[in-house]
Image 1 (spheres, rainbow, N blue to C red):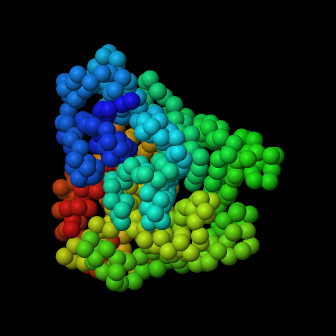
Image 2 (tube, one colour):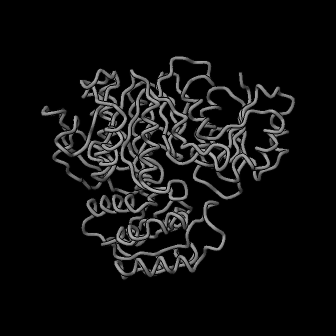
Image 3 (cartoon, one colour):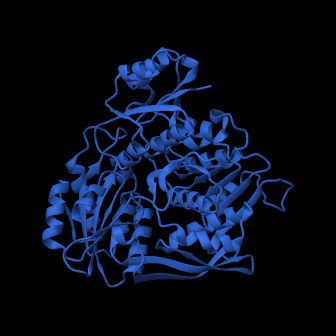
Length: 502
């Protein structure tokens, strides 16, 4: 039985939340990372978890000390050279078990690590929206008294705290990421290490072009994930998504009344043929009541009707904006009904979900009345959906977007999609790309300038500003008034700009 767990790359959202789970479960926990500030610094500090700066074999040697190797576990992020990081190399050479983050999530979900056999896994997958759905699921089950365990790919779920928790209830909620587990030694998609009882697939899109060569490879990864399900599992999928239809039609799953398979299959979406259908969606925005200490007097969200087959289940409300989020909530509603919760209880707890860190997050308001938002959107589809939600909520305001692309590989592979994703904004500011080890070292500002020129063919009011400090100065000087919104977008550290503007 393990006693100590070391997390290499502990500041990553996936690693930090696992570290919190391990600490709450009674393990001795420590980890290492770079000096740069991350959004997880706050939750790690509040959990009393040390984050050592830099990667040195001495960190591991001192932490494990004289504890027997079979009582120690080393978990490595795919970043920072993965298993070839000097800390991981030392651990492997000294007979400590070294596993990837993806394998660790599967281990935690299985209950084996905690000596439990009562855990039922809930995996939330999809190219877009999985973090919001996972956070919503964790929040609702927590409010419903289930005390679930969860690891969600952000730092905070606003009304319940840190995005990682070890619960005494039977459910374990995990984001299920299709990206590779480790660069060299474990190139399986992360989610293939999970064997959930309940699986949600929200959508399938082409992302991670450094790992998948085309959309068919992505679909194949999801086919394999579905094949992980046992015969008494439940599969909940977005029935509007063509790529999902292609994998469910080729995995032999026929549904509840099909070929005798005991896997229960539910679909959700806008199309009438789905099991759960959204109708009569209305976006709302009015003053008073929304997170006053953080975001002034603004509250937003939506209400909509949900039908199961031809029967109305009633009106449901959300406290986060966007039609896409209302559709996302259908997956949660379907899951909670399958778990045995009443419609009335679901209607009660759903509006209590106030969102998660870096997903259309209201940061604050400038002295000049400009509303500041931040969002993690880094894929063209995510950008479009986020902007649609903001525009629908504030139809009379002008929007300035500050965008930081994440990896040159993704930007190049999806260039034409990026070009059109910012249509309709008042102004677009591009920061230099937030690079990754996946990128080649010769990439730089020349590629960023080419990106700007390509976008300019659709969005003429676009400019490249090379530093965050200069962006802050530009916004303070040129964007003023209560008819303006500024939103920072990207998977890198662009959120620091939003923080400095309020």
